[in-house]
Length: 450
Image (cartoon, rainbow, N blue to C red; front, side, top):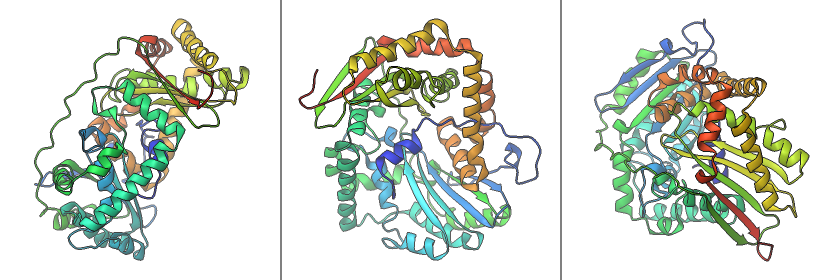
């Protein structure tokens, strides 16, 4: 994750947003409509999505790879995030740092992010710089140098990032431990940053082999949105990418997490000003029929000052100063989080009991039509806001390809949300936010009460 802390990455990637579709009818060729997205595939497997948008003379050029921490294994955890760093540190034609220098000289900007299920490389630049930027991206897909000295330097950067963003951050450390306790078998067991022992032990040959497998054109989707003509752009794509050979088929992720058959609990004791509380429940992935109801339940329970848990824990009982969490958009089943930042001196047992009572109220009595409508309105807002920019459009199309298996799902997803009933929200709460499906983690200041 380039130029971003792990905390920012988590907020950006698994930050409980709604990737929802269905856009306003009408409009011209540039409108964000399914029929305006041109789809191409090169012989080497590279999939290309093009959407012309001539509102401003700029281009959003996003490359998505189907690789994240989900594809790693013990001994190589965190390597996807590490390769993201190395993508800016030297390839066949461009030396370390040259990617940024060329990009900025041409008036562009770039970044990247790594998640559990995919990695994205994001460029924005004036249309006049298109071919120069395409050369940069194609060159680093063709192969990285993995210079030993640069590799060791970046290993140190990642290790420092882990110390700062996880080991010395109480919220992130508790999240890591709760996640590893709740998820035992599936590779979601570890986070994007990876374990420290793996970071310090990666071997150059293993990293190179991982790159050749997962960062090849047959495992990538190129999404281009902006001020261009499709046919000339596609000719440039063929010119610069067609000669990159396909890689071996990436091995599938076959491990499934076994059902949880009882509550789990973990407590950390370390230096802290105030305690931390985090509960996690197993929930299905984004493509499951129950996902929209769970996402709307997230808003009802956790989002905003009118949410049930904010009113109970922050406003009424004054046990916490903030509430956050929710469901993540992932390919495989993951977790529904409820995180409370307790007030100094707050009783964690009372806080946990209050959370359980509010969840029980939903299970027993359901939610009101007004609550559901408000949650749906919020979901629509989170969808339409990114569509105001070419970068937002490119990102949403790519994420739909990665998580839902096709950008087409983006244009019907909001219909799934709109079809959710109060009864379905109640049933999703009953089915998933159950005591036997829960892992509770607390961080208690060293020397504090049990």
